[in-house]
Length: 153
Image (cartoon, rainbow, N blue to C red; front, side, top):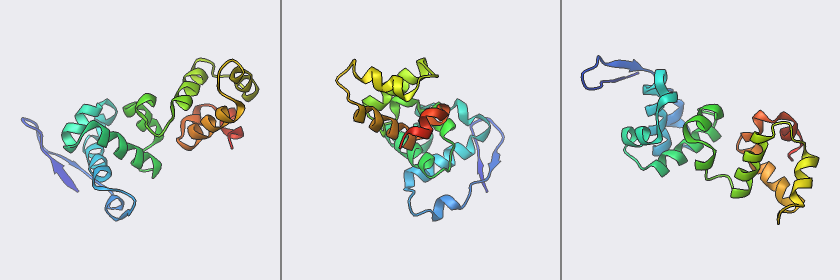
């Protein structure tokens, strides 16, 4: 357990799982962001990247990478990650995948056949669309699109 004191406010206690210190896949930045999020548990969804950067004493880019690691290792939910980072700051995704995600959000009932038909209207081929779908699936973005998630292989 740790105690955080903010200027002019009473100290708050919070608990941090020791798992973050024994997980060999987490670097110091991921550990620090986990601590920052834990210390702000009540209002962590209202934190900005700049807030986390300042509290964690790192750059915004380092915060984003740390949050990606935490989401990949399921130490924070993908929903929290998406809310705090946003799709367009997720550098695990190609522009193709980001564009496809934007299209899917605007057309939530789109089918794979419709997406593949749309590929004829661009320089993307069917394999590019399938690769972008796979990227979205691996990064957790197809959770809101169960039909596409099921067929993305």
